Length: 149
Ligand SMILES: CC(C)(COP(=O)(O)OP(=O)(O)OC[C@H]1O[C@@H](n2cnc3c(N)ncnc32)[C@H](O)[C@@H]1OP(=O)(O)O)[C@@H](O)C(=O)NCCC(=O)NCCS
Image (cartoon, rainbow, N blue to C red; front, side, top):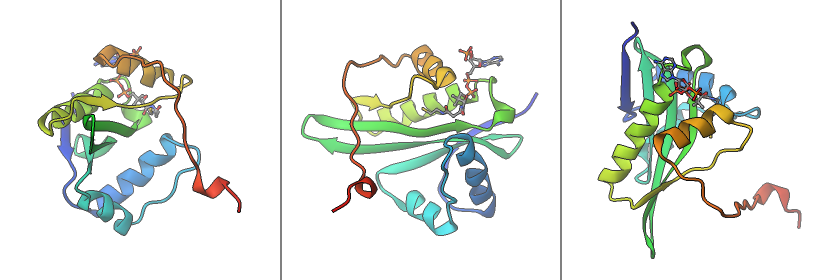
């Protein structure tokens, strides 16, 4: 039985850089390669945190929790959830999301939001199983790089 550890990332290590850059292509078809400095900026941020899952010490999955205060209350959101293909279907995704919910509660968030495309079937099942409720809203994104002057 492999040993699972869930931890918040507090320092950048070569293993973290390797792990994150192994996981990102399993999340998106257009991954950026993150440098040590890129990861340091995330780790140093006071409004986000990376939660890492290790299986037998090896980085096996991660997510990012972000938070901010709005006039209607403190909010948190979860992004970039990914588990290495070799470790899926063992409850690691669920453990990571539950850990993020614990952090968000401790931070005083009233709600935790996330989005997931319908094609991500395993992810949508995971979020519903944990208790996320689907909201009826329109999701918009403004892309600076897509607007020509
Ligand atoms: C979505 C994703 C994060 C889920 O991670 P995961 O670790 O496989 O998630 P879990 O193991 O907690 O749950 C997955 C399945 O394994 C099952 N499972 C959990 N523990 C298990 C165990 N001990 N034994 C067997 N099955 C188990 C769950 O019931 C679930 O089944 P279901 O999909 O039929 O409902 C992962 O598939 C992934 O990285 N996908 C690609 C990236 C992605 O889509 N990210 C989400 C962006 S919004």
